[in-house]
Length: 211
Ligand SMILES: N[C@@H](CCC(=O)N[C@@H](CS)C(=O)NCC(=O)O)C(=O)O
Image 1 (tube, helix red, strand yellow):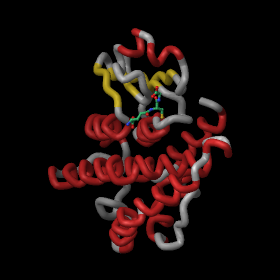
Image 2 (cartoon, rainbow, N blue to C red):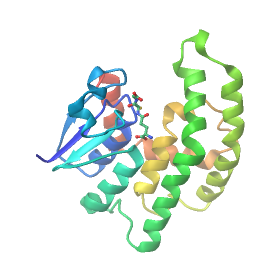
Image 3 (tube, helix red, strand yellow):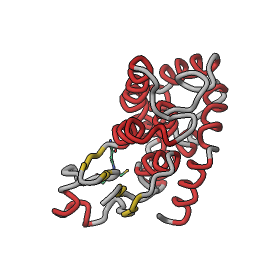
Image 4 (cartoon, rainbow, N blue to C red):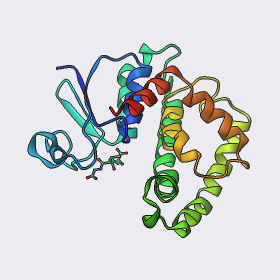
């Protein structure tokens, strides 16, 4: 029993692995990848009926969705980090939900399109118009984020929390490398602070090693 994390670090599972490493959790890692037949077979479909990673099994409690898993792990184990990654009050918890749902609804789709059409797809599959239109779409949310980070080191104030981990996961270093960041210097500084944390660097090493 214990915690099992399903998904390779080369997928959105990197977000959950980052959280687990921040918290110093012991876990079993099952590095399923996109395209693996096992994703669509009954044993894994019992963990995530959507047949996608990341997913976790925490002592028999199963769930999916990267940012939601991180909210759960932060709530259950957040105090294992010092300072805590968990919200310290109802108001902080509400802000954590706010930033996580904002990242998923306003940034995840367009940032993924930019990354696919500028970095990941083979040249013949890339459509510059899709990337341009997605980059135009993220200007407003990124302008807002930049203005918040002008006055605050992290999203809830002076300490790194699950709100930063979730938002910085959606704004991964490779995704940010595909857009012009000149108008957003405070996001650049914040993202660097987040992505240079030892737990994030450890997950990057897992990605590079193919896990
Ligand atoms: N919103 C989900 C997206 C999960 C997702 O799209 N996972 C991809 C890998 S990054 C996957 O498992 N794709 C396989 C498939 O869709 O068949 C999350 O954030 O966890």
